Length: 267
Figure (cartoon, rainbow, N blue to C red):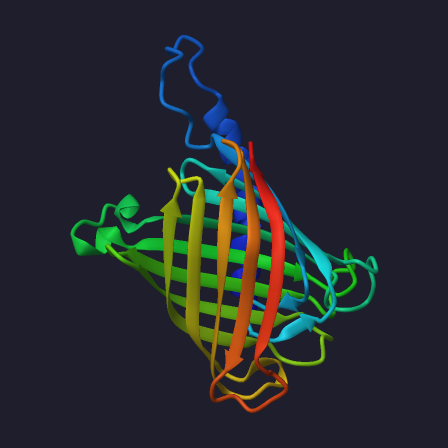
């Protein structure tokens, strides 16, 4: 699995610049009212202050003190995206797991993109590969994680249902093996005041196959938040709550909750 993730990520990163360059060489005589290029980007920067680092993968606590978590997300019209995420404790960069930088690439879109028709075309596929650089940044190797995710979702009238597979492969010398996580869940959002305020919640029932030296079993994790759209581009997240609750696992994971607040700006 590790070699597969590395090969896919490396191939995508190598091919992306050449594909973008090819798309940019259009006929100068084309009309200016042509639809945007498939590689037209949308850039979103977000940053939050978190009371603790609650892992969205394992449900454990990576760091139990406040930190700033920021994200630079670039998406394209054709569904591809790249992502740079950073976590920095208030104490600054150090050798704990509150210090992290993730490099990601992925694609998200309806399965109808592949020519599929019928009920299956309503399914949305999200495939994501990331390199978790932790706990000492820019020293690639021991302590780092290769992460892959496949998520399928379908929106119904009242709720969106999704199923997800996640796989983590630890780099050599990390000290423990990675693990796989199998999840099913749901999400819902409701807007108020002419879409100026949005309340949303999401939860996942996850089976952990016993990676990272932890117990095999089920746990519940999710989030809830209020989004305040202040301008066309600026949105405030306040409050945002992340939680995790062990169900059948018997290890050092305990009921866990973190509080966050921050903003996003879409260019």
